[in-house]
Image 1 (spheres, rainbow, N blue to C red):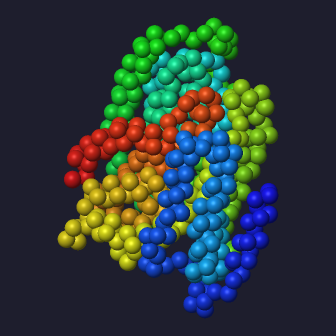
Image 2: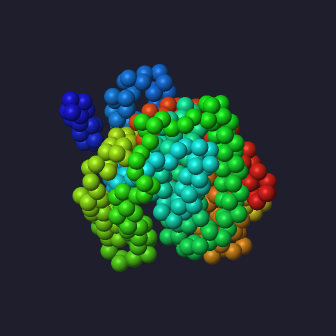
Image 3: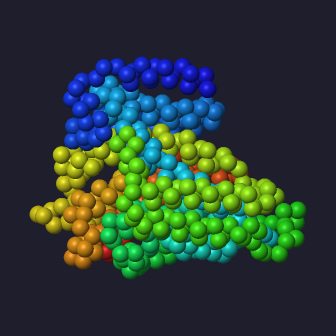
Length: 474
């Protein structure tokens, strides 16, 4: 609060400085074609803060990561206001807050709250077979209840099953690969990029048909690798038996099972918001808030409230439920969303923007280069929000869903696969990644750092992606 009292007057004064008539003329659109790559520095610094601060200044980071995120968000907003005027900077803030961040965090909050009320009673023992089974079930569920829903539902049972194990970190890493990302590739319900494609006219089951073999192959490889690795580590530990004191006298079952119905309600609310088009919207400082999206967000908050009300506190306590992970995600991602604004704007400018060489790499003699669509949409989705990144490359490849589902089906497959699969490469590549990591750390699993995680992901996933490239995208 003390920091806010010091900063807000300064911001207010800066924002009300007289700006040029040209800057104030539009007040809404940030022209990505006019932005140099320098504008991306706050976003890069935001990523570096997440990667380096927990290692170098862990105590400071633990207590002040929200302030660091706010600082890098302001590192873009204040220069934007000074250069382009307060109306434009404020409109950008409103747009990213109401149009992107609020729907994002409300959906995560609802799934986190509801899934956190489902507890697997009894005790699974984390053998390689059981762990692989949990990953397989989560991978299958992810396309139908979303990667976030499946991840929040199964991460705690996985952690409890392995509480007696010495080596646990690898299980969480592969959980992020499979359940939080790759498993969500078969329907628009699985991952936000595919849902945006559905809204743009891509048929609901198009990705089910065209990504099925790719998803199954990639998932099978990773499950086999995980089973072998987990078996080696399990044997190295001496095939530990769960201590009698940790064993549960409960029979296997579900506590708080009503929350499963609420998860289905969340899925229905999201799907309905994409299909219901009343044509009513509210303009808030240049941002159109459509009625169906507002209704969806209200419905999600109501569902979360019902879950909190009907689920016993004992069930949540036994499930290890706390608000810490969602609080961490909420604070960090507001800084990510704001500092990311110029990077997305530059990408959207296409061949007129500072990243034109990147956009130009996806075509050769007027024909799409599917391998480049796969890798570029994927690499950018690893660091940027994968939903707008998907849209950038979707529109670059004509943006015509009929053409992309027909003659250029390979291109749309490459964009879809890259945007979903490579969200697993970093902690921020997809929303549930960070929450899974946070929950794991909260329950005593020493997770790798930002760069440490990338050693795992690049070392394991990139060879798999190279194989997919050779088999399907060349």
